[in-house]
Image (cartoon, rainbow, N blue to C red):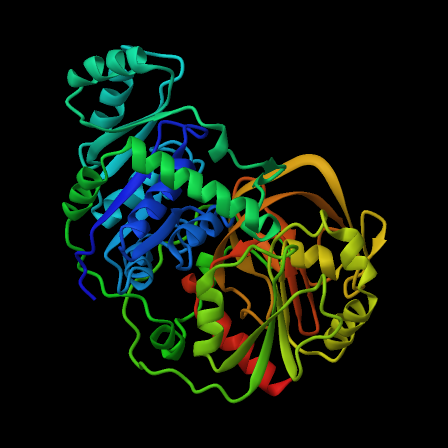
Length: 488
């Protein structure tokens, strides 16, 4: 595909300004014009891409310069945008907010620069008039490499309010590309970890996305926005390809000095830079009937599209099942992947499905590979909020009032079905639960940084952890997992 796909980044001065409304509405409005729209989200967020998928009919994809490394942002973007007429990238937090203590890394501004994409700044104008010009001027001039190509004013109260805002912004030299009034129809319900996922409210979500599209179509200059998207610079990278990266030889492990101290005490410090490069041996492996079951449904909605693409490229026949409804694992299951989600919301239903809980426990007891992240970790525990779960791990889980949130730099402390000892990966934690004990006799990860700790469980074929990881950053994870499925 052409590396000059039209694209723009929807950003804001801060969270809560209306990025999701504008980005999702813009995607849907362009799609209604007959354009093939590629939806993307900056950062590790799993929920917004679900709304993006409703708006475009395509898989919502994440662009995370921390989890995957800056060198993969362009290739992953081009992979997702293949065959599309235009791409819309929703930012995260404020435009210049990145990974804590890492400067601009993983910020919306950083990703916009990596994509050579113009930025549309969404400003909540509900409590200001002339001051909006100073705000926009500051954001537009802070980093000369970030091109703020226009502003969309959100929550504008009246015609007079709009007039005052436009007059002020003339002095800032940034064109107004849209004005949105307050609209309750576009509001989406939230919960303790953000918006309620699409899978839990599909009909209502469809209505909300339609309302966003109508609001954006009415209040924004779509022609001007499309023109701005066409001004994006060309990208020199090639599109990421799951088959190519899976078939490439694994990179050497870090030297002992870069790994730090003994595995039982994870070292501190920042992650070493990744080494970019194209794989040397392209070509997918043909599926051979090796079934890898992947949990889905309302309780397990957090996953990256590239995970299943990598598993398929490594030779697996990926089959999705719903732990809320299916009483058996897919026929012939040789391995199991259970990602994130909201098992605490569905604890009663998950517990009531005793046949499946026993099937999962039996599969794990057989030594088959099982990879579980966050929600998957809770599901494998003995109990969750006092309700029986699968009992694969001798640990109990419960909801708490404390939010655990942030990027993590981790090293594999021993060999597992996912990684060899010493493998470095970056992850993200986002939960209000606690597991006791927090790690097994063989922990999954040593978390590096100012407060080093061990985390997770490695038992037989099970790898369970709170860390959400993006397998595109380390394709050998998928290759290793499928190989273990084949030989276990």
